[in-house]
Amino acid sequence: MIELRQATPADLDAIMVMIDDAKSLLKSQNSTQWQDGYPADADIEQDLKNKNGWVLTVDGVPAAYLAATDFDENYLAISWDCDGPYWALHRFAVSQAFRGQGLAQKLITLVMEKGQRQGVKAFRLDTGFENRVIQHLADKLGFQERGVITVKSDNHDPRRLAYELVL
Image 1 (cartoon, rainbow, N blue to C red):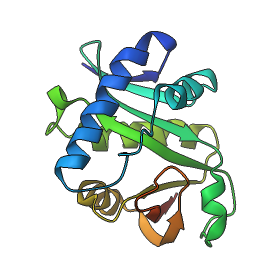
Image 2 (image 1 turned 60 degrees about the vertical axis):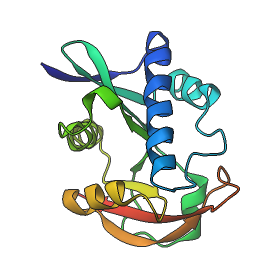
Image 3 (image 1 turned 45 degrees about the vertical axis):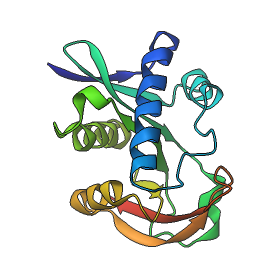
Image 4 (image 1 turned 180 degrees about the horizontal axis):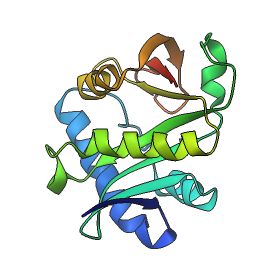
């Protein structure tokens, strides 16, 4: 059974394994994204403290993670279609053991459904230029590319493609 739930401090170790898996995958794809120590335990702990973290479980086992925040200062640099409430989807990772099962799309879809029920009108995300997987997923889910932002967490290539989905 696949379920979405809010992440708790008890999930930290499993989430960090997923994050490390994602870092390794990005590195194998010659991406500089997430190769400077971000996201670190402290970033995920902050998600958990702020109740922004979401875990997708398969038969009770944490399989995927993302954080949904209601503000991202990096997003102030470009124009968006929706000025209303939004969630920025960040720190997305799927456990290596669960890749290829469509869980990435399922996780994002379920989190967006939660947001909609809370009055969120738009969803935003960003990704590195080399991260074709997330770019493809964003396109598949109906996100529109809105421009390029600069993030502070990457010293190699801080440029990111920014996407938005207005519902």
